[in-house]
Image 1 (cartoon, rainbow, N blue to C red):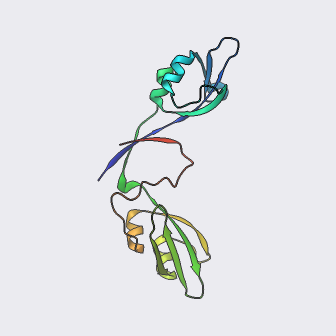
Image 2 (image 1 turned 180 degrees about the vertical axis):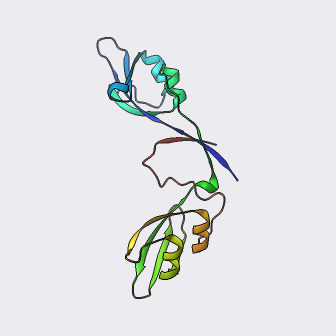
Amino acid sequence: MQKYTIIPTQTLGYYRSHRTGLIHATLKMGNKAQHITVSPTLFLAVFPAIDRRWLGDTIDAAPDELAALGFNVVYPKIDVKLADIPHQVRYVYVPGLNRYIARLLGTKQEISASARFFRKVAGVSERAVLGSVTLTDKQAAECGFVISRVEGVSGHDARVSTALYA
């Protein structure tokens, strides 16, 4: 079973001062905000992919990048086994056939299951006609999806910014 380490990233706001030519960077907001002023040479060495002509922007930064700039940050590393990652399934109910058609996101797999069976395995309400549900490996395999060890790490959840290191 493969093991991955997920390291959360933080959004860093920065702008270049016209008067001094230095870059002012801010991490977090409110009374927990951390401010730092660094030289453009150091900032561009840590973040080489940013456009040098921009006067200000935001960027997602990993803890090691923030530490290189001089921020005091500590983030826990989260170890995830591939089997622990849930599967996202989209489903639609077809009343004429009394069946659910379900698609495993991130793959090309699509199944058709009887309504009673799918509701029992996936825990879907009898009134549900269209929706999305998160299934474990065991539930997805019981529904009829082919679950391999490589499958499961998909970018379907873009709400969380993370750096993924194998």
